[in-house]
Length: 252
Image (cartoon, rainbow, N blue to C red; front, side, top):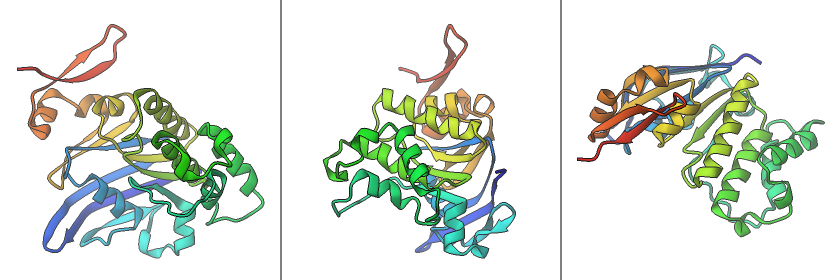
């Protein structure tokens, strides 16, 4: 299930404002690419552009060598799944019904098995008959991710998937994202936590004011100099006793 996503020289202009300018990103099977940067850097815009939800002013986005424009909607939905930042569900759907929506592009003999596997993987089996509105924020996040998993695509695009999760939930969530990558999928995730990116991402792309200022492995890109510059705050990178890099703001 080898997959590749390629965004080249993407430019997005909305109402005269340049939201992204000349941004490129690659993601291949077996890679977790984290999109980082301060608020307003263009991270969600980039995710929307590579998902095919935002029109490009210039540049190109291809999945497996084909332009997004060449995909029929259903075919695109079989190629990539998107977890948006905000999900509003106003009807009293049960958890199982919401996860089953991920099967919309397929509707085949595998549906029940894929739904069950997604519920299991996100540890929401016991919530299957609850309505979405009765869940905690963390449970809702896991259910939304289960819907994305049920879609069973080789490419997953996640917009700040851990923003509402506590530290334990965040770790479990990212361990799942990383296990998808280890199974040969490609994941692109907008993350706001630099330490999470350092631990789980295979590659990072750092945006600043709509431009890509660095890309590569977390260890080579996430340096004190670059981070201090981008976040306008003195940042240091230290190493723990077990050899892990940790990113910390410096106190004046």
